[in-house]
Amino acid sequence: MNKLISILLIAISINVSAKKDDIDPQVWLKSSSIDNTLTENQAVYEFNFAAPEKDHRLIYTIDGHQDTSDLVKGALRIQTTPGKHIFQFYYSQDYEEISTDSLVINPHYVNRYTVIMYGSQEPIIDLKPIIYLYPTMATEVTVKLTIKGEDQFYYPAYNDQWKFLAYPNGDLVFGEKTYNYLFWEAPVGSEIITNDGFVVAGKNSTTFLERKLSEIGFTPKEQADFITFWAPKLQQNEFNFIQFIVNDACDQYALMDIFPKPNNLYRIRMLWSIVDGSYQAQKQELPKINRTGFSVLEWGGQQTRFRRINCTSYNTIAL
Image 1 (cartoon, rainbow, N blue to C red):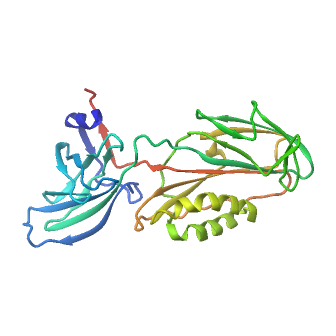
Image 2 (cartoon, one colour):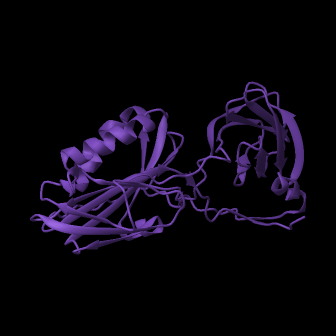
Image 3 (cartoon, rainbow, N blue to C red):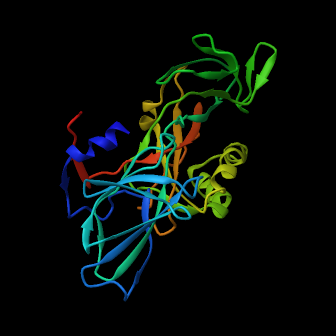
């Protein structure tokens, strides 16, 4: 809230030639139509908020000027002049504030936008990173993790390391117990900062994942483990942006040391965020797993957020 109040002291620097692939899928244009009742000097923005309470009082700014309004059926209607305008919205302390890029509107037009709101208290958790190990023969293996997040959870029990007997079929034997993989989880956040990835309809999540995981080289069992965890979450949304990050990029979540060192180590995270179906993604090229020799595969993922880049910069004067 303090951040929004300080908007009255903000100097806004606008990059009016923002690149085509700049990212702002939190606010997207759904439709645009002419309203002949509007004059040459009038235009209307209508913002529809995807939030639980449809009738709610909202604080907003347009070009740095603050105002309040009651939402009507979850929508905010603002009549203004044609041209380019920047908006910020404060819905409640349960949601993060939203800042738009420069939104362009023509005379006589009504532009309708959908606004996706992120909960301010929702932790971003690196969900279900699991580790498969496939040595060429029965091998005693030690795995150590340095996780960049608190409140870690491990299974099986982790005492500064995992030490076990690994078999070529993927069985991991700890004493008298056998496991299919190693599991850890922790609140480790990240953001999507490029549009390299895929826009996928929620109803097509399973088919998409089957195809992409096959291309990468997941085994049928690995695919089943991945899809049964993630597809139910993805299919709840009309559209998702899906991006995979691989290998060294996964060091931002945790460092992994394995002894003896495997011939092939693949680390894959699926980042995803709710978007509009019209959002344009740059198709991402994915790696192909090589399973020659002692091979290890780790996968995980998280619902995350886009970070807008190269669009609008703010110089904030703290109160």
